[in-house]
Image (cartoon, rainbow, N blue to C red):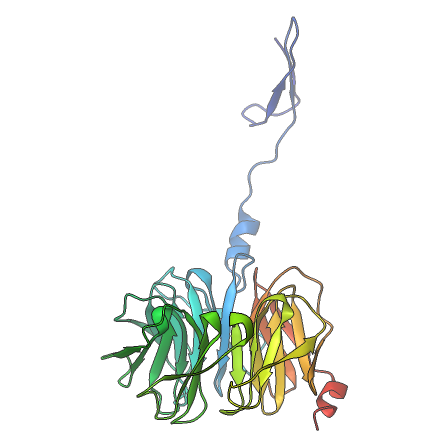
Length: 330
């Protein structure tokens, strides 16, 4: 056997054997394994392995939540993100800020994590139901609310110490939950369900149905009458009568819609392929975003007229809302 190698003794290298009467092993020197770059990347707050699911903010900080226990925080007056260490690898699927400035986050393992106003210290609270919870919100009185499968709705008025639970006994998943004020709240879900309460969540009733049992990935209501839902194929429906009737609004995308972002009278929709839509009158038009095959799912509109949106593979998009778009809403 003959060897063709100019490598120092002890070097590890791959080999290729060629068939023949005598075998020649071709080798090439391989550089020593250096993990410094990998280690440096692991120290960064934002990782390419992150898949963000929700964004919330209070007067002090912005929080981003995602898979495998990922929590990022950033003060409003800084561009520097920090990764918060929480003792869980469960994936966060929803996040909200409360009127008292604290945060609540829902994991896929049916836990609510409660964070302080600086989003630095978090504690976990188990939910009582075996049903899978899919969404959560903080009510105007700081009560925690969550909803999910089998039209189950749970709430705690004492920061997770005790819970009350109700269900409409419908085999459907509730995907969105929103309080409009202390008395009125709306939930949307599978098979086009629209639920409402007018007594602060004591009683929930079916208030209407979406067209063709449309599955709403996202919903947003400005009032008990005026609301939007979004989902597959870029479809966005609007109601101005509390869900009794719905009109499909024009969109210039077929990308699935995963979230709505609002501030005052501005309303944006987020979706797959880095899609950001702006509502102009009764039409939704795409804003210019980087062409990336990554979803956007959560975001906040900041005071500087800038959108911060979060999505797949560590995508944190900062997008200025064009002045012409804002002017068109006046």
